[in-house]
Image 1 (cartoon, rainbow, N blue to C red):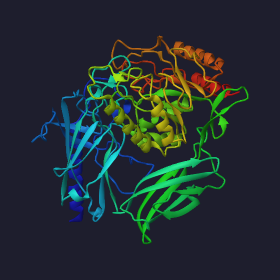
Image 2 (cartoon, rainbow, N blue to C red):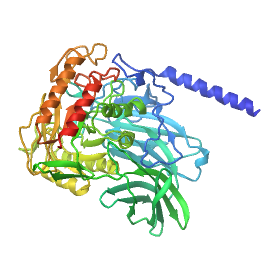
Image 3 (cartoon, rainbow, N blue to C red):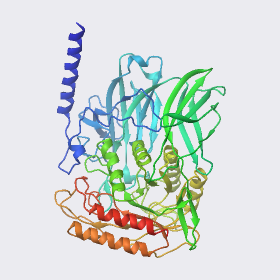
Image 4 (cartoon, rainbow, N blue to C red):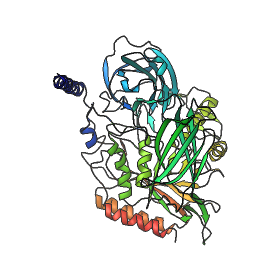
Length: 603
C-alpha cells in the first residue's frame, strides 16, 4: 500500500511538472542566453537567496503564479487571465509575457502554498528579494503590509494570518517608472540609446522560512584589518535584555574566535594569525550565530566574514592612491550593468549570475563598478567568494533634477522635489543597510553624471557618517564638489585626465565603449551603439590595448572603469555579447594588458 501511495504521488508530481511546462514558454523573439533557453519553470532560481545569513529550512515560492494587469485602483480580479513565471519582470521574455506596464496600471499576482507540517508552532516569515516599485501584500485576503523601493529585500511575519491547509498569497504592484520620482537607474518605458527596457513587478526570489518567536533578524559585520578584529551586531526580534547571542568564527571548520554577549551588545572578536581578503586571495571565515533565551537555543544561522581595509595614502611621488590592506592597488574594472536579454534585471540562473564576475576576473580585472542597479544578495556573495572589488552605485532617480536651480525641469515628474529627495535618502539607506556586511564592496557611488543629482554635500556627508568604513564617490563624472573621497572623471572613448585633485585619488569612472556588433547576437538589427565602432575582434582588441597604453601614461589616475562587461540592448560595446554566447575580444591579450596596467600604475 505504501509503495502504491508513493507511486501515485510521484505520478502526480510528474503530471504537475508537465502541466507547468505546458503553461509557460519564453515570450517574444529577442535573443536569449543559454541559461534562459534551458530554464526549467519547475525549478527557478532554487538556491538559498540569502547566503550571508542562512537557515537550514526554507521554501521557495518561485514558479508560475496567476497574473492580471489591470487599471489602477481596481479590486483584485475575480479571475486571473494569465500566468507569469516569478521572479522574472513582466517586460521580460522569461516571465512568459513580455508586456509593457504603464503608470496607469497595476500588476496583480496570486498563488497558493502550504506550510510544511514540521513547521508547526513556528513563526512563518514571508520574504521578497526585490519588487519594482510599490508593493502591497495580502495573505488569505488580509492586507498585511506595503513596501516602496525597487532594489532591497523586505519581509513580513505572516503567522497570524495563516489558516489550516492551503494559503492564498496575493501581491499588488504599481510601477510608474519615469513618470514618478523613484530611483530607477536606466529604466524607461520607451527605451532608447543608453536607456533600457523598464522592469516592473517581482524580480527576485519570493520565499518563506520558519523561525522561533525569538529569532535573529539581521547581522551587521565591520572588519578592522589593522586590529585583526571583526565587530558583529546581531539584530533580533521579540528578545529581552537577558537573552544572549554566541558567535563562533571558523577557518576550515575549526573555531578561531568565539564570544557571547546579551542581545543589546555589539561583539568584537579578535582573530589570531588573521588572513586578509583581497582579489588575489579572497579568504572568507565561516561564522555561526546562535541566539539563546534562558540557556535554551532559539535560533541559529550561518554566515561568513572577511578582514579587509580600504583606504587612501599619498605615495612617494605625491599622488594620493587607493589602498587595499595598507598597500597601493590600482583598481581596474568594468562598468557592469547587470542586464539580461531574456530576464532583464533577473539573471536566468545562479550560474549566469556568477558568470559575468568570473569572466571579469578572467579578463584580468580586479574590480566591478555595479552601475545604477543593485543585485540580489547572491551576486555580492559571489563577488566575496571569487574575489572582486565592488563600487556600488545608487540607482539614479529623475534625470532631470537641476541642482543649480533646485527643481525638477521635466514635466513628466509632477511630485514635489522634497518628496523625491526624501525618498532617495530612504531608498539609499535601505540599500546600504542591505549591503553593509559584504566585504567586496569598497566604495559607495551616490550620483552618476548629474542624473538626478541634488544636495551633493548633504548626501555625501550623510553617507560618509552612516558608513565611514568605505570610500565615498560623491559624483561619478557629474557635477563636481569638494565632497567624498575621490575625484571621478568620465571620458569617451579614450582615457583622458582633464581635472586632477592633489588631495584625493583621481579616478577614471568611465571610458572606452569600443563597439563591435556581431550578427546573430544583437538585441535589435540596427541602431546599435558604440562610442567607436569596428568590424572584427582583432580591431577592437588592438584599440583596447592602445587605450591601456594611454592609461599607463596618465600616472595620476588611481583607478579606471572600462565600459563595459556585456552588450546591453542597443549598446554593443561589451567584452561579451548580450546573450553571453560570444567573447568579443582576444581574452588573453586583454588580460595581459590589464595586468600590465594594474602592475605599472602604482610604481
